[in-house]
Image (tube, rainbow, N blue to C red):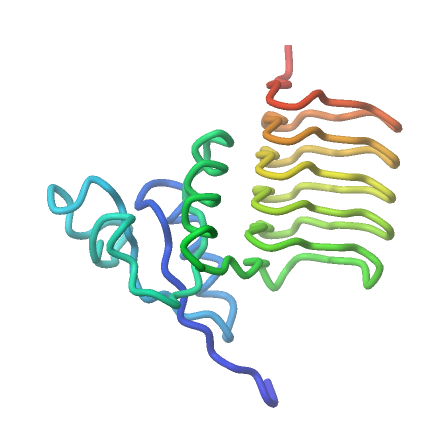
Length: 186
């Protein structure tokens, strides 16, 4: 679009979440992918159809980054280590998402295709929402949380830091998910 600055981002990791981020970037004209950085380098030099440029500590200074690591504890550890070294993590949002003007999306957030974040909700730093996630009104998704595809988060729910809400789960109105816990369909 007019005045859009192309941003070249590096992806931390070269697995399935990196592939997910690559797909978002392919649909987003303002995002270009520099390459992937994974500690399995040099054993792997390409993945997901793109080069693996080095290990995590080889990222060139100043490169904006996206976290292609799914596990919340690992996301947090790598994010904090790289933030301390001055790296930035712009939100990566699929163009198909619906995000309210009054919602707050923090640094390092990934919002997958066909997800929605409604009025008054906040997605805190480093959280990852996969595809078709429905975040209703006045919801808080904690830092580094992982929200599985098809999850529905009811109005006023609170999802704690590092929590994992599994595939297709529904969190009721006003529901609470404690920090660092897993909620799956039983």
